[in-house]
Image 1 (cartoon, rainbow, N blue to C red):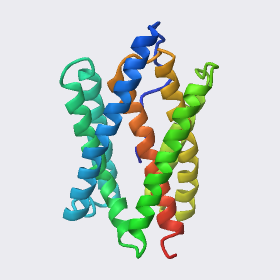
Image 2 (cartoon, helix red, strand yellow):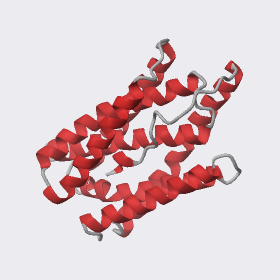
Image 3 (cartoon, one colour):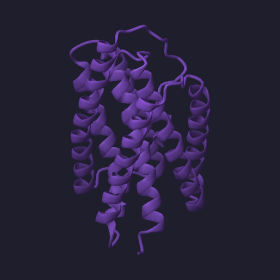
Length: 231
């Protein structure tokens, strides 16, 4: 469901910045990204222990997710240049953790659920490390990737919403695999934009990378839960 939660990657405008400023934005992005994991885990834990999201129907869950997420994203956009930007972003990551708790709870119900979650964490971390490394190595401009990634994301969103009604496991696995590829590329794209000085707001940069990581983790967990849950 969360494939929609990204701003259009080709709406950004390039801004000339110094190397020092680029490094500062990148450093702040990494720190805030690490901090954002805390409320995400807290939200997921609360959701699992209370069963709050598990009680929602698939349709109601989609409505709550879309409404809450887009509401938070609007607030983040309005506060990204103020002191309240970070708390709003952290509130958003708590909400996203809460929404993730339904999937986490389902996987934890499997006999090897805890190990599947750890595998998903490890896989997400490995992808992030790989994309971060590539963003430092690649010298060519990746701006042309933006439109293609955005189109792919929209197609994933439409198919994902359709699958809420279809409830096809095969389609879900296919979409999860595609999502891992698309959002891994988004991580590379967004980090490269920061390194090139095209993104100068670390809150916006953190939001973009966080959403990609969220989708990668969610997709890995879905795949492991459906294919390795009985191992």
